[in-house]
Length: 336
Ligand code: P6P
Image (cartoon, rainbow, N blue to C red):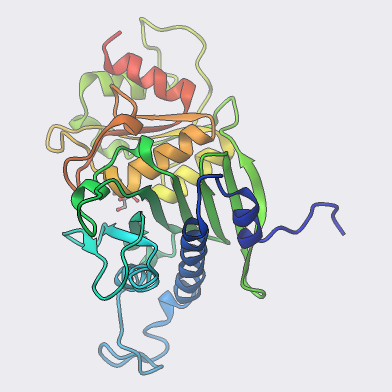
């Protein structure tokens, strides 16, 4: 038997919660871990719809057939709307922010989330993920407002993701490092498997959808050439030998790069000057994790952590991973 101690996520959260956290914070993380288990359970059967003979939109259990991302979104809301821990929620699946319905009590935290990022990959059995961030409320005047939601990633008190892959992993930080837990499905517990995760060096991968190359700025194209190790006349200094890995699922690409070292980039494009990745519930929480893991996240010019959202669904160009690679991207994008 290994000497490593068995640590469940519940016990780890309790033993490592920030001093400033009250019980609500701890239970909020528990609730997200519960949502993760329920989504993972549902995910395993995602491809069985046809085989189980679902008639129309009613499946073999007689449940209303729901798209998985709608299911995940509803679940995260329903687990949190009545607990008195939150004052507002914002989801990739919902146009507007969600207030806590009366008569439920308003809480002091805000939950922002992408319930199932990359859900188009479900049909092809590629790993997908849930991304979340937790803020403290800032608007003392109301029961929850956009002011509480539209905060800089730097002001997050916690962030994390769940990766539904060959195994289900829960990775999060409350500001004291990044820690990964793997679901033991037979027991239904997330067990500590990756304590103190940090981007290893030298990095091994770069992740980008190079089919958009012609849409990128010349500076982004030059950085891409550097990543590929192509001869950039003005820059012969040492560069790491990198392999290209991109599966079109942000959480999976980010997670692999966190474990092996690398950079994910989704640059600005002529037709999409803010790129594709959403600031509030994708780039922001992952930027928080990246910095907690010794990495860095930039929009190409400045830290994503310092960008105050002006809109719930605002997009941002995204370079995230090993600090050395992201800072190099900034250098190229400044034209230096
Ligand atoms: P593209 C999924 O739709 C997503 O938001 C991220 O998970 C992923 O990194 C990106 O879009 C993929 O975008 O344009 O390469 O298909």
